[in-house]
Amino acid sequence: MTTSEGTQSNPHPGGATTSIWQSTCEVPRFPKLTKSGSTDVCVIGAGIAGLSVAYHLARDGKKVVVLDDGPIGGGETGRTTAHLTNAMDDRFYWLEDVHGAEGARLTASSHGAAINRIQQIMQLEGIDCDFERLDGYLMSHRPGDSEELEREAQAAERSGLTDVSLVDRAPIAGFESGTALRFPGQAQFHALKYLKGVAEAIRRMGGRIFCESHADSIEGGVPALVHAGHYVVTADAIVVATNVPINNLFAIHTKQAPYMTYVIGARVPRGSVPQVLSWDTGDPYHYIRTQPLAVGKSFELAAVSGKKKYRLLVLCLREETIEVPAGKFPCLVVEPVLKEEGLFKAKGKLWIWLTRDGRHLPVKMQSKIPVGSIKAELVRGGNP
Ligand SMILES: Cc1cc2nc3c(=O)[nH]c(=O)nc-3n(C[C@H](O)[C@H](O)[C@H](O)COP(=O)(O)OP(=O)(O)OC[C@H]3O[C@@H](n4cnc5c(N)ncnc54)[C@H](O)[C@@H]3O)c2cc1C
Image (cartoon, rainbow, N blue to C red; front, top):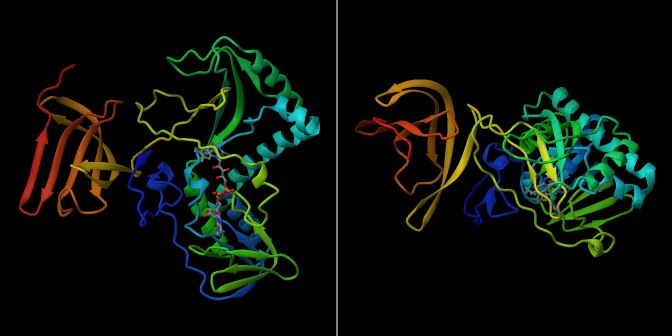
C-alpha cells in the first residue's frame, strides 16, 4: 500500500492515501447526471453493495440507474482489505446471545452464500479479479489462552460451520500463534477489479451508472424521487447503498460511533508468508492477507525529492535471469514511470532489474535518454 498527496485532483477520494487496489486498477469513468429521467430502480452508491444490487436487478430485467458522488468504488470498498469470510468479527457465541441460534445460523449461511455468489458472478462475467479460495485462521491475541477459541469453535459448529476446527497453530512460519481456529473455504479478491467487471456487466445489460452525481435528497412514495443537483430521478423504488444511510439520520446514526481502521502495506519475500487469511481476537483486532505482485501488475509509490513528493508508477514488466559481473540473478524487470513531471522530465525511460528474492536488490539499471543510453551493473556484492 502506498501513499500519494491527497489533493483536490486526487482521483481516489475518501482518504489522503492510495490503496493497493486503487494503484493497481483503473476503474472505468462514468458520466455525470445531466438530465432528469425515470427508471424502475434508482440505486444510490456505487460501492460493492450498490453495484451488487444493481447487477442483480439488471439481470432480472429491471431498468436501473446508479448514482454515486465519486468514482465507482471510491468509498470504503476501494480501501477494504477484501477478506471474504464467514468467520465473524462479532463472534458466533455473541451472535447467539444477541440474535439467538437461528440468527447465528443465518449469519453463517448468508456470508458463505455471499462468497459463493461473488465467485459465481466472477465466473459468469469472466471477471479477472485475483479471486482465491483459502483458509482463514483465528488466533488468540493472548498467547496460550485458547478459551475464547474453544467457545467460538463450538458456537461456529452449532451455527452450521461443521468444518471449522481447532488446530495447534496457524501455518505461518516463524510465528508461534498457539492454538488457532481454522475456517476453510474463505476467499480474497481484488475489490476494484471485481467492481470494474460488475459495473461493465451492468452497463452491458442496459443499466446506467452516473458518477460525480451527489444525491441531495430522497422523497419516498409512488413514484419515489431522488434529487441530484438540478436533476430528478423518478423511480418505482430507491435503494440507499451509501454505507452510512442518507435517508434516515436517526435509526442508524444514533447507534454509530466513529472508528478508524488502518491498512499497512509492506513488501515481503515471495512465498515467505503463506496464502491464508488470519485474524486475532484483540479489540481492536489485527488481520493479515497477502496480495501477490506479479508480472503485468503495477503499483504506485511516493517519490520524494527535497520537499516535493511525486507519484511514481512502477510497472512489473517481466521475469528474466541475467548475468552481470557480480553473478547470475533471476530478476524482475520493472519500469518506474513518473506520473507527473518533477524529479526529472519524464522524457527518458528507465528499467531496473531487481533480484526475485525477498531482497529485491537492484543488479542492473538501464536508461534510454534523448542522446543515447546509460547502463549500470552490479560488480560486487556482499553481506553488510
Ligand atoms: C481498512 C478497511 C478494511 C476492511 N476490511 C474488510 C474486509 O477485509 N472484509 C470485509 O468484508 N469488509 C471489510 N471492510 C468493510 C468493507 O470495506 C465495507 O463494509 C464495504 O466496502 C462497504 O461497501 P458499501 O458499498 O456499503 O459502501 P462504500 O464502498 O463506502 O460505497 C458507498 C458509496 O456511496 C457513495 N455515496 C455516499 N453518499 C452519497 C450521496 N449522497 N450521493 C451519491 N453517492 C453517495 C460513496 O461515494 C460511495 O462510493 C473494510 C473496511 C476498511 C475501511
